[in-house]
Length: 85
Image 1 (cartoon, rainbow, N blue to C red):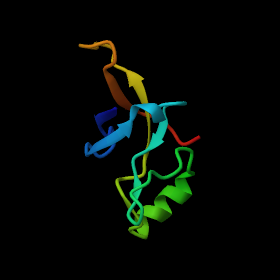
Image 2 (tube, helix red, strand yellow; image 1 turned 180 degrees about the horizontal axis):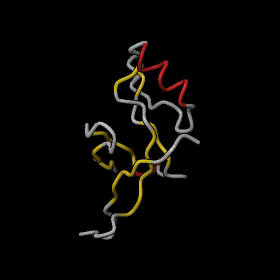
Image 3 (spheres, rainbow, N blue to C red; image 1 turned 60 degrees about the vertical axis):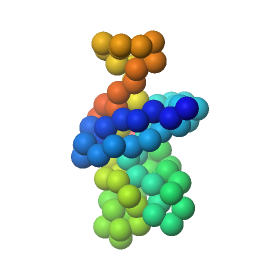
């Protein structure tokens, strides 16, 4: 099952497989060549490099997936801005 969320940085839509919500930290980017997500703990420098080289779709900024404070259903999630780790 996929989550469809809006990036809290660029407001573009993104898809996340629910099974991939482990530590709940992500970067909003997939590699253009493979459509695979970039590593979730990529550094700011690596993310900026990927964006500047046009190697990814997405802004590559960090966010975390959390349960909505006002869920309509038991599993409503939202994306929140977080810092690079």
